[in-house]
Image (tube, rainbow, N blue to C red):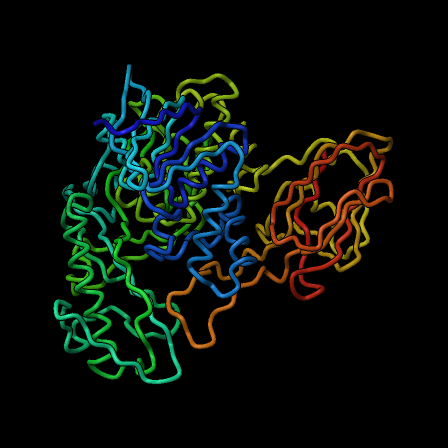
Length: 572
């Protein structure tokens, strides 16, 4: 008896449903690409999901685009910071997206290539006991471990480069196969009364604080015990199961130490959750036409074909992990955000293979900054957008797409509210040439200056109050098809949404107070659109009308009445 094989014919196939993968798939689907995403787990989110529970970290400068949309949806929906609700936010973003098919519990295990191209990939879905074969024009590997590299012969690296290869002062003198390690995280909950903990007999024993040199293990603040890390000096793929077993011994041993061996202020705390799926930091890295390195990260990464940006510190963990008694990592914050080029997001020898996430074309040192999930999400959105441009122009190769159409891809990304340092979005011609007046206190010209965030000391925001109006006068009746609005979602807010530990009273989430929650559009004085439940920064409103004047009236904010504003009011 043979297991059934279901064949899917799409334009774009994404392997991996972490933050990079879902952003790649959603971006492509929203631009009209028939897309399929294959995820080997039952939930989306990868390291950010309820199965691993790592925070979505990123740059100081705040990533926008799809990752901000997802964060804002969670702030609106997930009042009590519940991980199951968070999983559902990611689930619905994928499942409810037009042009997008999702295969959950489906692990990629084979690929067919021909002439340096991927023809199809095949996955095994354990829940249905079926094979799924996906034929597509383009593929993106967002699996973290780069599963398509060994399956297709795509060139990749693993380990640390020698300092001399790229002139990286932070790299070791000699190249090796060492990586950053894996972690099984834990979470605790504060209660009203003492809680007892009996460790499993197989847990490690840490009798005193001498085992925790340079490792904070208090329960105060945002402590997620990320330093419980192993495997950097082993095979971070092949040894995963063995490492998981050792990490669980560490995790339960650490909690036993906190509860039972010394005073750590944990009497009323109980162990809420232990991750049995290790979170990975590093394994295979693809080789593209450009390999991002330490110099790029620290010098601002000025690339003509910039497609995303990073800004997380060079955060290189010692390969010895928890067994290393010195500092667990180095952390060097770049002076400015740095660009990441399209040339680092496609394979140099497999012509229709893109990638996004912690597997992009970067050195080990470069990866130590680009690997965090908010950055990975922007990389995914860039890849999905690039694939849509390729298909629109009839391109069959990633390299051709990146070299010929990177300006168009950048325009699309900025239009979708992605920030690209050094570039400015062009406001739409109809809005740019119209007469603009407002009743607000801020400068209405900020609504069409093409910069949708505070930058270089300028707010770039039309500050407004409830009842204030900004109005375009086109001089004559013209057809109006779409309005694009960008509201102030307070990009300076704390973006570590989900809890590390559950304090008594709980952590409550809510949309940023600065966000416009209620507004209306008026065409020649008549209301043509109104909502009282907005919770997003980027809002697109389709229209099918003619009018001489179009006005935006602010009717309410998510919080304080005088706290926010609008970055963009564009119309075409």
